[in-house]
Structure formats: C-alpha cells, structure tokens
Length: 108
Image (tube, rainbow, N blue to C red):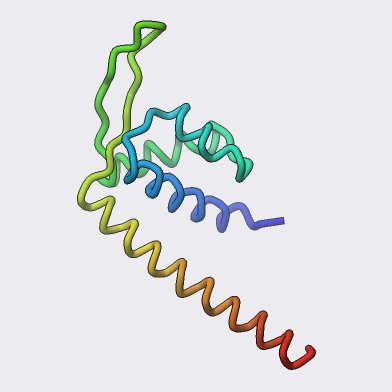
C-alpha cells in the first residue's frame, strides 16, 4: 500500500498536469483521477490549497443544468511548479529503476 502523504504528492502533480492541459471543474478532476483511486475528500482540499498558493485561478461558468461551475486554470507560477515537480518525479523514477534493475542484474 502506498503511503498517504506520498500518494497526495502524486495526486497534486496529476492535478496540476490535468489542469495545465485544460481548465477543469472539480468533478472533472475527480473523474479523470478515478483510475488512481482518489475521491473528492482528497481532491477538493488540494484544489483549494493550490489555489491559495497562487498555482490556480478560478472562474465561474454558468451551467444550464444546475449551479454555476467553478473552473480551475493554471497560472504561470503553477506551470513552473509543475515543471519542477515533473523534473523531480522523472529523476526519482530513474533512480528507482536503476536500483531495481541493478538488483535484477546482480541477482539480489
């Protein structure tokens, strides 16, 4: 099982990446992250925190089928933070794979 803090960090990177590609409202984010088993109790606090940190800005869009939806749009600061996270993540994965492949090659 993945440590919850580690998982939250991964979810944060995923949210930044999704919203960099397209402005999204909360339920869309939840729907797109369903395959990594997260729910609204995880997503909405992250969205609020990232918005408070200036990584997203929000705007309202009227919805003919119900209440207006709050959309999240990545800021320049958010895009820079995502780039840092992606670089760190790629380096982390590379190092893990080197360890795992090294163990397989050495028969450990």
